[in-house]
Length: 568
Image (cartoon, rainbow, N blue to C red; front, side, top):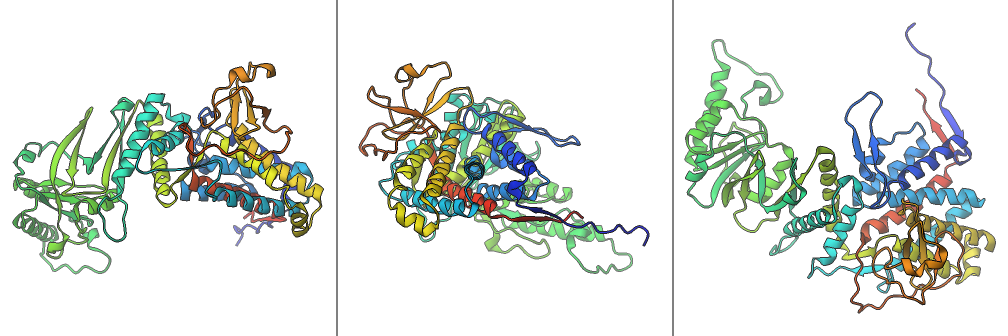
């Protein structure tokens, strides 16, 4: 009893947004994330106190899980953003920066928090309604008859991650590969419910990026050098194969839970080996040419199968099981104690060997049309390769989202500035009815609108990291970047295209610096038949949800009165 420690009381924080320590940490978090934003964002090195692997990144999916705080209030915000990233794979930094900016603007304006929450909700509904309109000025329809916009969308995501360290040509090459792999996973002639295929990503360190490639089918590691010549002897087409999910190592522990009774004088190892060899005899009798196992295969069984010209691949791991079943049509066999049913067998059309430097891989070709492919990613070192792999997986997920909503938003900060100008103009309509419904004064409503629009503009301005200035044109409300050494009198001479590349500078255009006052105006929509297409695109589905998550998380934070923290 003397070793028991008295339970510590819980720590209660009243009005966390009035706590200086919490506000300082929120501001620091906002600065840290803002510095990572966009193609020229600054990289961060993540390293824990006791050593371990160093990660260099600017991606929210890697950065946010590494940011741990003793403040539950801050963890509430980061967890909300991470939940969005886990579901939509993109726009995590956008959501985080906008959320923190909304909180900061609400504090600076002096608005009552309940008023700020009400105004934010109202303005969010205006934004979502506008973005869902067919004539939305910052939305682009994606045409699946051409891969151009899909490549631009993929390239915009990949180029926004500077830790990938890709040249323009390399970024374009990787973008095309991701789109090619994505299109291969969409079945062409699949009646009924369409089931998307799988992309298996394989890393090859130390090779040029341009050596990266996509192959229909599946590439798996070569287990050894014993059967290279036997591949030449596989004459049948297609080849029958079998896939085991159970371990075939012959260990007693693999037999499952329960009591094992062993009679005196019985050699358990020889009994197990006899049963494994009986399994091998059935496989040979059924003319199987490819034997695959998720776990370990007993060496004696391997030798027996190979002596009969069967290719054996073990230790596949669980991640390859689903792609293999899709590719071959095989049903994983979960036990070796019964006869293999005929319906469990699958087929592959052919087996070939692919070589990447010193790495040899076995290429399983599908017997017919298949929605499974393998993407080989090459890069110069492990750090860059790791970031490219993460980004490509996220990009493929974003491309899948376009199947549900075939639209994109203009990038380069132009959607944010366009929305800010639209909200400033739109929110002034029906002011009397709005302030009555929100139970606030006109002044409070104006302050709330200004804070919301400045938050959107601050996200757009966060794309600039080299000392330049961000502008908004007063016609279409797109974002422009002005180099740091250009004076105000020479703006027109130093602007070519807006951030997304859709609007070109003209002599009669007028601009204003972001986050400065300018007269309200309704953004002029661009002609739909224009031959000029945006160069930078953002995922519509990801950004639409990120906008909602940012505002709702900010409102939740503004609504928190007490934080009760268990200190035990």
